[in-house]
Image 1: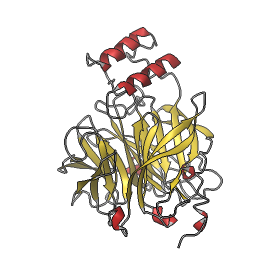
Image 2 (image 1 turned 30 degrees about the vertical axis):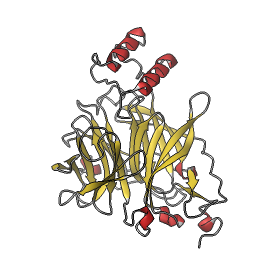
Image 3 (image 1 turned 90 degrees about the horizontal axis):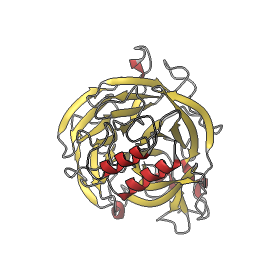
Image 4 (image 1 turned 120 degrees about the horizontal axis):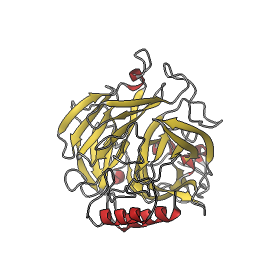
Length: 397
């Protein structure tokens, strides 16, 4: 039976406060300079359904997805290490101070809870290694519901984002027998998945039809003698001025996180061609010291299991898998320099012509090249986008 503070992981029923940011050294990726902050996502806590009065901590995050409006989905398949439900997808929110600085993460709600040993929680092992949202009007989880990349069944499963209702799914079959992350791409209406064991990027229609499979070379793209690392996380970067120019492509870009001994980032176009590779250690042949400081308490190599991207600001979120309550790094990379997302018409000035251009785009009268009306990147055009744009316009650049 669980006792108070069992395994020193769940304590006293009080949610842990959000950790303040650790400001780290800036980093340059794909030609773009970023400010780097690190948060400890294991401070996120919520009520344990098996132990009233106790809280669970978020550990060993596997998947991430940006919802917009400072909200993200995060997933874990390690809740059983806390003697509770094994698989979780939760919604979290970035907390901010009065100046708008990000100060941490807080739990908002549970979207999916699943356990292989409890019929009340499905009775099968979901293992949510990847999470994405199908914003199209067709296929699995159409209309803005959740798709989970299931590493246990090597397929995907849909769930209602509102109440977690099971929507069924499909297998990766011979095309992808080793599922990890997944990402829906609205530009071509395809679901991209990672075949971890075979180092491949595999795409399907949202109805489950196989489309194509292309290699993920990892760090061998820089040197054939390098350890390739292992592909884990996958995130879509739209064709937008907030994406680094060196990897921006028509239709958008796919960014893969590489871990397991030689961490890095690798960018692909939508046809699966490698655009650029960035090592994340000081020794990209065999893997060295991490370029992202994990803190004094972490002695493991960087293991970036997932990533998310805010298309309104160009902010990149990189999430380390962690080990119970250690190495639980949630890295926030905020672009630095002359970029200005509110310069909607891209003429280099922030003025009322930008406001006019956004309103015209929002009302369906046409958008500037590379821009669209989904300003907050949640997959929908609504008044939240208008609010987000006006807030950035008024804040200036």
